Image (tube, rainbow, N blue to C red; front, top):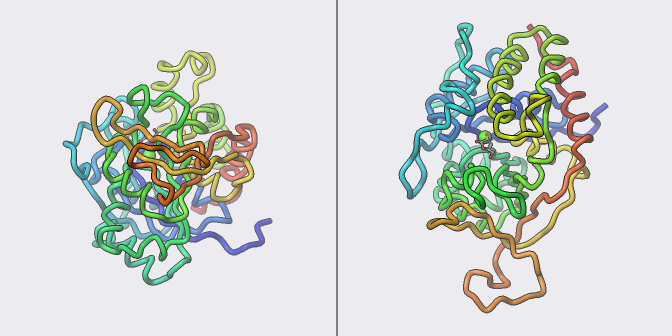
Length: 331
Ligand code: RIB
Ligand code: CA
């Protein structure tokens, strides 16, 4: 039984299969109230991301404002979305979609974030699981945003784990490194949930089959289909996933951290992002607090962030299963 008031969250996302997994965890968990979904390019175009957010909420019978946000990186040229990972539609190439009637909120995602933060200062947590252009644009619209939001939790980056788009870069940060550098330097309470922990938690496809069979609902059927496609990519890439298909639990771990931070161990330090060159998208953590480096960029007065470095994988999987198996869907 959940006793405290649910945490109000704006979910900034590029759905995307693991984004869909995260959204349904958030909608199912009694400790989370999703007050808005802001979308960005990333796994798909921003138009497709917005359409998917509308679709996923509609088939789950939830009414949540959805906005469309940035369509390209801040400085560098955009690239074709990875249809071989998430499908051309971002949801594993669904064979068909049921008709839905929900419509976009007309505001741009960055404006929506600013409006909501101004209306409820200190109340809203921003959970970001895509490239960070919406958040960096919101900072430009409202420089006081770090004091208006309660907390920022982002899925992205990596400190010691090899990257997933280059040896040192994680996809969300690499997709808009200039935006990420601004977000890490903004000075808000920020926690990074990156590959150091998401590569430790594998969600097996059989779990999604059990969830779908339990609910027999369009929302969980859609999720099961999407994860099937996504798992084929991961199982081909990672030998340890070949015999028991599954996928990394990237985006959902940002929400798991929100409701169960004790499942993670963290380090604290200044994070900088490499914005160009071979290391583009690398997230660098100053791990030695006592050292004053002589090189510029690591001054002692720079904002600090928390980084999840270790995770109780079994605990995360148990929480995910318990939450998605609960009675959260209506017809
Ligand atoms: O690196 C993992 C991240 O990239 C996740 O947010 C996933 O959705 C992909 O875009
Ligand atoms: Ca994502």
